Length: 508
Image (cartoon, rainbow, N blue to C red):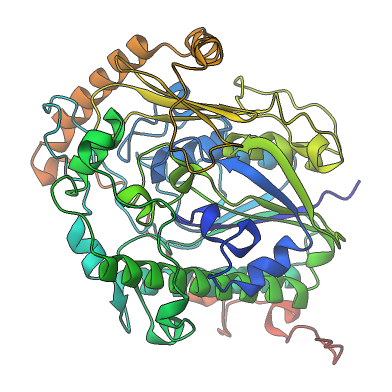
């Protein structure tokens, strides 16, 4: 059996609800739309943690964040955790990472044999959450009303610097793989940082939209009294408890966010073009997803850290080689499902001997026609900044339960109430109680709280040491130019030096 190659393209903080194939017709993303037209499109796919590093750790491990101790953006991802790259290595895959993965700790590979770029964010304990803070004391989330107000054009930014490099290295990697004489399959993850805030983008992308085309939030601002306890905590953390964004600020920020999506869309198009030109597309599974969503002014909220769909629902597209049609899948899924799904396709359905119990399930049966939307579940947790107690969300079928330890439950009927405006926990007590009891049968908030506090104490001790006493863990990408271009003693093969393709067979 010839094992399929895998290309995962990741965006950052891209809500599924901001994309045209999920109903947002204001956004211009033709390359993603074309990919969706030939993919399995999961209409109810969720992240497992609405924060960058824990979400990505869960994806790579196929395990929930609380199981692997990924509590916040500065939690060490344990090196002994089996990951998707490790499992693929065991099958003979070349595993390559280009771009962001936000690994915290000394292991900056986690099974990837090659890493083409550095990361954009720190790998140390600097961003450790602190649950010693009093309730409603603003935590330094790093984003506030100023972040929204500053949305708009730029010619260069940290994020543009980074994503231009990720794109270039990823495209070069695809051509290098095509010219490689080895027949080993590959797994390439190309992970971008757009459209993560700050909301800044090149003017030409803003120019693709007219201001009047920018739709405003479906659900407007709310008073603090109208909000649930978790939303209040997050609003305080984001500096939005006392003053919210004006309509002009909202429209400008959404305009920029949409333009940033168009920027990522072009990157997707360029990668898929390189995949096709290299001849690798005929045996490559293509996945597009992101780590979590972005509230984008819905309910007067911004950024992430909450369980409403704008923050937790993510795009998940899986295109198999030769696929020519779209298949929409309503069943709930989440990012922990990617590991078992890809392993299922790479082993042609043979069962994998998991080293650790995994929390995901293979989505292959859904892609092949099976369906049980009333029983499929997605689980999301949050134990990071702005809160002082474990919080989670369980989506099963049409119902979403939001559990904040020590506070009243929230239950929403996502069919009748997709905007999550009517908490029916009291009126549908049998459903909310059943979901809550099931959740607490395997998810222990008191145990998790104890583990979080102990982890924070250890990490704070290390991060507060003088800088010269803290270990440097950030990955440094080094390129050996003697192996890239002609040198007297480089030993490059003719195939590595030659054009691709070697004869004029180019067909667009």
